[in-house]
Length: 161
Image 1 (cartoon, rainbow, N blue to C red):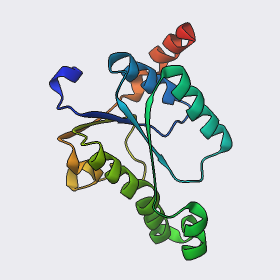
Image 2 (image 1 turned 180 degrees about the vertical axis):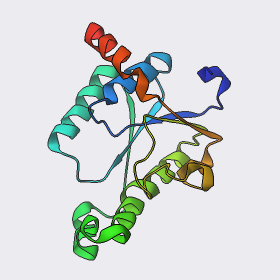
Image 3 (image 1 turned 45 degrees about the horizontal axis):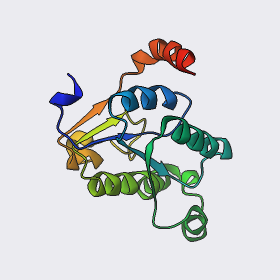
């Protein structure tokens, strides 16, 4: 199914992990103006922020950064290190730092089709319950980019620099 068959407005979310360049490059070739959503938890490695800047400049990305209302430092002062507080703490951390910012992004960007690389790995991550009222509820549909394309795309990335 091509992008012409999907409801627009399109958005792409990325964590800017090691495979991000592949999906960003592919989607950006087809739709260079697509908003690229990053939910910044405030806990990314300095190298990740540098990689974000590098890819944004190189691919001329339409980067949209969303964060929690409270900074990471403020959250720790109020709640402690939520990720060290068992399942409930992790769920609260994910809600504050991932789910709410992604919901806000999808709403503010009036997203109808949301492209993302892979399924969420845990309850509370954005998209986990997309079919049951999760963050994708504002989208007509939620599509995931296949991780099976990685091998083909690595050679493409190498050939395009």
